[in-house]
Length: 167
Ligand code: ADP
Image (cartoon, rainbow, N blue to C red; front, side, top):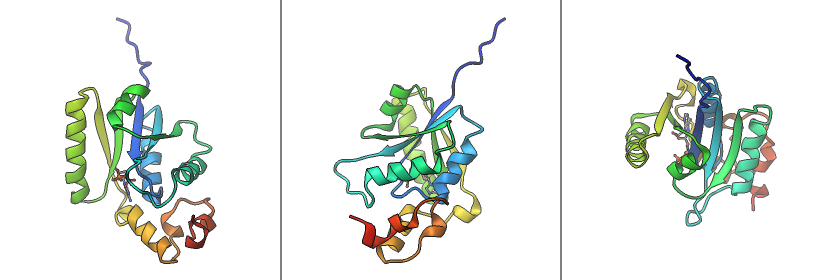
């Protein structure tokens, strides 16, 4: 019997990434051997004000993965499962830090599964050193003029994370 193994495993990594942190970077890099491609989906919500513009968030993530051809970045406003269907993706990638992440993620994953039975959510546990890293803490540091560079991917222009350079 001929077996066909050419089904591409496409994963969507959805999030607000406001901004993209070392925790997010680590999850994507660790997921690369599991999937054929990963689309980082910046969820944009016209009714929710973000801290960094979607253009900046997209640019920074593109810079982090500029040499990784299995990773692409897209902005999407709508249900993650609809984006998955449009991209032929059967996997949603998420990171887990704490038990409260788990409870939150469990509900989303189970609802997504109910609405789109073909989808599987794949969770990677954060590395211990990334457990406290959280985009809202990074925003607070930036807002208060602190140095958030240790929580941000290497290679980005840290001047762009200074409050005086934001508009
Ligand atoms: P959302 O607003 O949908 O929670 P985020 O941008 O905060 O989106 O995060 C996207 C995904 O990245 C989520 O699965 C989240 O749990 C995960 N994540 C965020 N920070 C970390 C971290 N430090 N380590 C591992 N996973 C993380």
